[in-house]
Length: 367
Ligand SMILES: NC(=O)c1ccc[n+]([C@@H]2O[C@H](COP(=O)([O-])OP(=O)(O)OC[C@H]3O[C@@H](n4cnc5c(N)ncnc54)[C@H](O)[C@@H]3O)[C@@H](O)[C@H]2O)c1
Image (tube, rainbow, N blue to C red; front, side, top):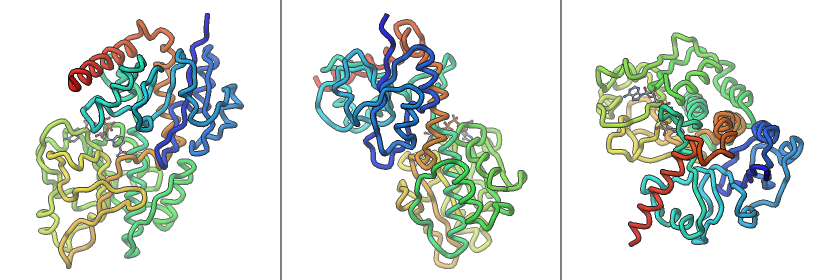
């Protein structure tokens, strides 16, 4: 019997250091009888030698198009734009199932090449929840960025370029040091605190030394009364981590912020949810996504009021590539172990069914 084979491709997006397979998960797959090829990649947070040491076969950077078509290619982000047909099976985030720009072109590449896409965003467990997501580290990194912005603002400065951290310890140490040794005394409010991102944000705040009472944790019960909420103005950092599904009253408004005048404690809003351009964005005080190079955007609060900035970076886990990859890949592992049975394993048959529906929709849209 031929061994199931996975080919970990390099990521071509700028600043993307995360990986879908880590040396740890690759080892577990090898132990289960898989053969694993890994493209050499300078950008990846894990060294090539870490994969080689566990028994993966290293291959040239970006060489997956030359792999036998029976090989399944695994990666995280979108493939480089092209019109080339795709004959392989790919496991990745393709961002082409919600009519995003260029969606039909991407699907047409698979259709023309005879390949299959298993989109990581749509691998769900029996209860419909995603088997693997990056939420926890998005919240963790977002809270860290918020604390860094607070520390800069306290010095009358603006937060500069954010660089990915080698590991969680390096991030926690840096944030604590910039806050003067500990985050003790800082107050934070996390909304969506029971979700993946929310739990990550709370974890970071604990790790940098906030007192438990100073980490206010809200979820559906606490927001049921409807905003805007004065409580948000009484903390230093507000982190929004909700999964927005329908219109809800705003959590905080510019009018409310102006009305609070100089009394306001709130200095930084981190919108992890990043529903920036959604008409129902519950934080309608800013309108752009921020970036690693420009992490904050100021809110117009009037000339005499204390400063307020928003962080709305939509790829926060990249700030902590090692741990984010490790957690994601561990969560994906049980499904990958079922991949050889993908003709019958529910997680994969559901994903393939969805792919076929989307290809059909793309073909119909082109007709
Ligand atoms: N910025 C980034 O880099 C990044 C990365 C990953 C995820 N996200 C986004 O973060 C959001 C949350 O993702 P998640 O994986 O944590 O979702 P999740 O489903 O695990 O958690 C969402 C939480 O929000 C709560 N919630 C929903 N509506 C609420 C409301 N009105 N009031 C209070 N709580 C409410 C839910 O009860 C749940 O606990 C999503 O929009 C996701 O796309 C952003």
